[in-house]
Each structure stands twice: as C-alpha cells, then as structure tokens.
Image (cartoon, rainbow, N blue to C red; front, top):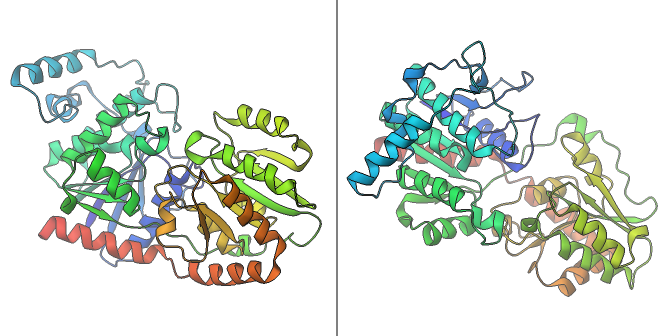
Length: 420
C-alpha cells in the first residue's frame, strides 16, 4: 500500500510536537511490510532519516501556471453554499493567485517554519500539492494537522483517492476558545472533505465531534507514543541527586501550556521548601509576562529560563530534573511527559491533557488548581518512597507505549477506508 502524507516539519529540525509525532507514527507504520510512505513537507534540510520513507520538498517542486486550476480553487471552498456564491468565490480566488514567490527554477519558496504569512504559505503549499497529486503514485492521502488540510483536499480533488486527516490539535486548544475564524474554516473544511479523521486523544475526538460537527463514526482516536531512547541519549550523565532538586516545565510558553500556573505553584512550594529550583525551558509569546510574574513573586533567585531546547538538549534537561510538570490548559496529547518518564522523571500532568487517558503512573491535577499542583510537587521532592514508586512504575509503563502499535491502528484505518 502506498501512502502519500502531507506534513509541515520533521526531525531533526522541529519547532514543536508535530514533527516528533509525525516521525514516530511514520516509523511505526513503516514496520508494516507492504507499506510505501512518501512524506511531503515545505522545506527539507537534507539530514532527515530516510531509512523508512521518502521525502519530497515542496520548495524543490516546480509549478507552472496551468497547475493553478479550477480543481485547486474548488478544493479551497466550503462545501455548503449557493451555486452563485460558489462561482463568485471560485473566480475571485483564481484571479487573486500571485507568483511573486516563484524563483528562477519555477519553484515556490517556503520558510519551513511558521512565519507571519503562514496562511499564504499554506495556500502555496496546497498549490504545489496539485503537481504532486498528478505525478506521484499512491493509494491513500494522509494530511497531518490543519496546515496541510488544503493540500490534502486538493490532492483528493485531483486524484479521487481517499483522504485521511490527522488532528494533532485544534484551534480550540491553541487559543483557549478564542478561535481564529480563518483557522477554524480550514480545519472544518478539511474535516468535511476527509473520508476519515484521526485524533490523538479522546479529548480531541470530542472537540472534533462537538465543535466541528463531525459524525462520530468518522472519527477514530490513535494515541501518540514515544521512540525508544537512543544510545547517545542513554549515555547522557544523570545529574540528579547533586545539589538542589530541579522541577522543570518544558514547552511553548503560551496560554495553551499554562505556564502561569507553574510559576504560581513554584511560589507556593518555595514558601515551605528549601533546596529546590524551578526551570522553564522553551519560548513563546508569554515569556516576558512569565519573567515579570516570577519577579513579582520574588522567586527570581530560584527560577531559571533556558530558552528553546530541542533534540539532545531536551534529554539533558530531563536527566538533570527531579520532577517534570505539564500544566496545560488544553493539551490534545502531550508527548513530553512520556519522554520525561523514559528518563526516570516522575511527571505531573493536567487532567485536561490527552496523555492523561493512557498514563496511570503520572500525577494528575486540574490545570487551574495551583494548590493541588504545589502539593504534588512538594510531595515528590519530600517523600523518597513516593518518588521512587512513580519513577519505577512510570518507566515501566511508558516503555510499553510504542509507535509500532499506533502504526498497526493506522494501517487498520487505511484498510477500512480503502476496502470497507
């Protein structure tokens, strides 16, 4: 079976969890002996692992004007509208297309990131998908997250092949309910056109059904997993037990991730505990606010901001941490607690996270319950037996959560979509 996948990022160059999840899922799926996977992304760097897939770069795919056809335009339009409105919008979009980003080789340039003109890059990505749709051989289309849904729709429109979309998050998660109408439209349109929808948790599945009005029979949860630790990571020195105990938050410093609850809990723990430091690893639009909040709580001497960390750096901070905290307000899944537990770090996660559905040996609190979060941190740094229990059982549990099993579930969905 040949799967044509659309994605936005891929290790080792990642900007968030999407690239990590895409890598793990594809690698797990590739263990099916007859799977042939082509992964399309805006801008490969050339050092990606090609041992189990083929990668196509949108930035290396020439386009010509006739590729911007009415099939592409039609694929961008909502399904429910009057014929008059349909043709009006179709002609407007067609006339508005610009070639200002096409280089001398006839290729559209992409940043490979999440730039300020992200909607324009998504539009250009879906244009190049028209070329790929006509030149590649595939049985099924798989689009990862909202950025690639228009490309998936375009490919389905051109080829007639079935489309599976993978919801790694929705704008309800990213915005705390203050949904961007442009993003919602792209998400909703992708779900409406999809033959099947995969969500990373039951939490996200409920959002897709209730907020995007999808038929429950069309939506299946496939939980994320983790890759086994490489030899390089296993050889990272374990720095715990020397000096102060370290409590770590690692992720984007945005309202979705609940960084303010981590700071407030830290202030409460420091009122009654000595010899503990708090680390906030990551960056985001709330960084300055968190620095000011730490200063107002008078805990700057016990609180550290590291900036963005990736790859081996992530595991170095885990190997130096005694407790990991993920107080997300709305987390579709959340792979980082699993990665921390692989390193023997007891984890505290919000009940509002998808990974809470599969983790029995992580402490779970409501993200807004600062007192409960502070008590959980204090308990883990104060009671050695409790700490050892969660460390050992958590490690055993997370080692049984494999991408191979997620790949088997995904293959089953492909078979149902293709063969009924």
